[in-house]
Image 1: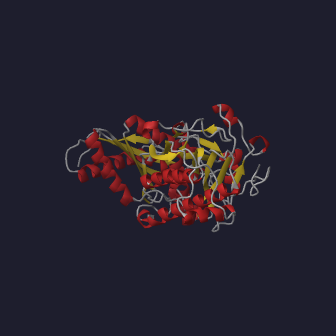
Image 2: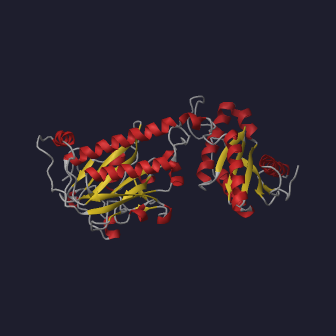
Image 3: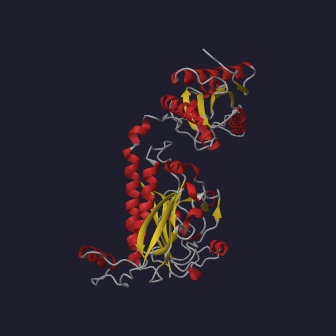
Length: 471
């Protein structure tokens, strides 16, 4: 039986109102309950799941039977939601208690999902966000007991033009295999979850075989049988960014309109809470970001470089620094004006984010058309590989291809845009002697001098600093 909100075959793609739907999670484990969770409707794609040891896990004791209202007030609220004036039906507590394990991605892995509103990553505490996602699933399962559940979110800078080009990632899950599911991605053009993501409407499914939006290959792969599922959209402002889904209702074995309304309440709470968490940190983040490119600014860069050098001293590890300058960038300004030049810098900032994907890396605009990249735990060879990947991306990228309000049409800048790159590695190119500010400045100067050497030798080059560069 398909929910009245979303009838068979009615799933389209709405870029304006769509966002990320969260497929049901194959997850953590209702230890007292049987079954493999979440055989939801999607084919798993993308990165392998992180090791379970690195996951954040919230564990709370739960009753295996569904909860009854704990007060008259709660009972009345439940009756209003169901349209009935009678108390909530269902079995009494059995006394059997299990452990609901809810897993969420490690805090450091949540950054890409917070890249919202222009180019800035609002400095929401990732640990706070991870704990919040865990709490949402715990409470959702409290009110609508299910064998599995999950929250999926999109990465805003990876959203494609079509559902097939957009991936949704499991960021929190419970059920028998939640730890394995986290970090995996699903295409937004498949199954019930994709339907919710594309249309921004809730979905109730109690008969998978008769539902045209059910994607059975996921069940086949994991030898699981999905009997029912409900999914609701999660929004940030007016854009769908994720989906909250529960799979296989316990005890009653089917989901009801009341269950769906309860889950919609949780989804709205989730949406508002994420917005509040982001807004609360916006002022701090604005001080750390370059408005034009969305990369970090030089003030934050100096702060982060100091932190990484201190960490390298403690752990006896390396810190690589790349100093990059765009070649012949002045030609863009001279030919098409400074608005075109600003657009090129903005596009290059996006290119850097797409190319340098190391989680610990810090990307910053140093000034003008100069950029710096901090790469903790990188030696010379690995840093050179990162620099080479940036040059390769530049070579294959055409800039100024869109339509701009300040231009009559696409400019199609045809002159190749290249970069001269210098790099230095601490403590290879300078010793650990001296105070931290001195070492930071020496490392920066070493990379800067290597960059100017690359320019002097014909541009579009990568040069490594001279060892033991000192003041």
